[in-house]
Image (cartoon, rainbow, N blue to C red; front, top):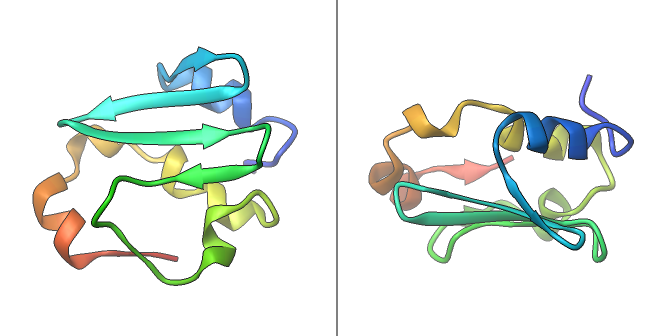
Length: 85
């Protein structure tokens, strides 16, 4: 299970770059980030977010999107049509 305690290890495994306490990865031109200082999950502009509660570290469920193999997603279509749950 992905938790706040092991989330950084997962991001390292998935080749996110780390600058101080912010992990970043650019996939098909889209930048996604996990800010450990602010405990925020940052998605690219245009991604529809169901609620601000899905963009923080308060629930392990919020880490699931970052724990998937996002490179295989159809990013342009995803950006227009998906919600982050």
